[in-house]
Amino acid sequence: MVAKIVIICEEEFVGDPDRTTNSVTAHSIGFSLKSKFGIADVANRLISAPADRLLTTIRNLEKENVVFVILINGESGQKSSDVSSLKNLLKIESPSPVICLSSCSLSTDECALSIAKLCALSCSKVRSAVSHHLATKRQARLVDDIQTHTKSSFYLDQIEHTFDSKNQITGNNVAFVDTTTCSIPIRLEGKVRDRYDLGHSLALVTTDRQSGFDRQLAKVPFKGQVLNLTSAYWFEKTAHIIPNHLIDVPHPNVSIVKKCTPFPIEFVVRSYMTGSTSTSIWKNYDSGVRNYCGHELPEGMVKNQKLWKLLLTPTTKEEEHDRPISATQIVEEGWMNQIDFDVCAKAALEVFAFGQQLAAERGLILVDTKYEFGKDEEGNILLIDEVHTPDSSRYWLASSYTERISTGLEPENIDKEFLRLWFAKNCNPYEDEVLPEAPKDLVVELSRRYISLYEMITWKDFKFEEGSEGKIASNIMRFIA
Image 1 (cartoon, rainbow, N blue to C red):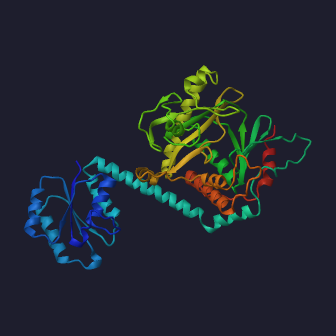
Image 2 (cartoon, one colour):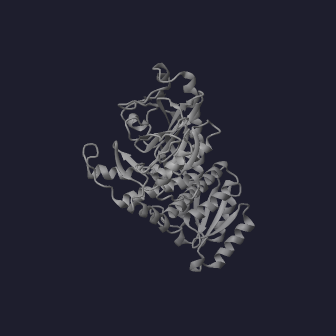
Image 3 (cartoon, rainbow, N blue to C red):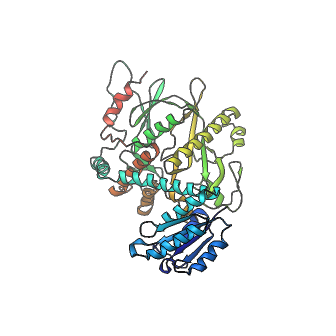
């Protein structure tokens, strides 16, 4: 049962219920108790009330679950005799707990939290709300700490120096030395990653190239290192769920992986009703689709709300355009057989659930992501490509999600969308033959955001490897069969 709260204070600290204020008042504490902890039964009384009136109040509440709160202001020299008399009266006459809070040393939320913690002793609902509040505050502190860390002059100097000296990893300066002992691998260039066939394995080189609108938009310092090392981190963390293709990481931008035959399906897992692309769940729902990838979607859902469960929403990998597809269609159309699909589907949901749990501990919400799977030469199904990187996944800041959604705002995120918006505003990225150069401040900020996400996810300090493109070839050569 939620306790009744009686806040007793001087008249000037009662406050105005119709006016928001930064001051600590009985009304502001009451509002915080209701909005954050679900404690709505809050009454205010005056310290200056006649003793017999207060005594009547105490006796009327003897059989109820009550907490008396005396709100004092030590800074203004409040009449200590009145407070002392009141405390003694409550101590002698009331069986209920009494706490004193100072408005000059505590904030409104801190006062409310102190009261809620006491109420949590007898109410599991309040206890749950207190735990959630503390977790949210912790998540905010985690994010603030890393944002402060990556905004330090050392980080910004490293990023700016790499940008100014054009030392980003482009893949164009990976120079193999000709040798008679083995053949030089051929470079197969992708949008962001280059691939080298080493015989029994592949070398994947993740560059700093930033793509968008099917074009290269910029070269973002250290982006490739972030993507490669983030994937390596998640491959290691999820190996107990499903084996993966990673063999070694000989260089911050290089992964040596097993050769696999990829399945022609992307396993997209979603936890929220969001997205802006033509294949996203929100874009389809907003246009009237109610059966999405085999899932029946209820009426009345709104953008960015949490789904009732994790949804697996696969898409095909086709030359012209990807399309959402159901589990039944995947098998019926011959994209995969049922046994292989079931293995991949189960792994995708389990890896995502594990990722969400770890992300929450880091102050993040893992909103949605895509996985790719393939079969190695022995017929084993492996997790391949990339895992939970800033490019393959959507992350929101957990601490502000509930408040922002309740006020109709978009969730806070750390993404690359602002760079795409700049190009969309300053040119026609689909038709212009030559694109303008992205401003330095935007590219530097994007680099910092990538690094921030890496540190938030892994809890590792980022190690800058500037000018390391020349070391890539020698690290790859060690693995040539």
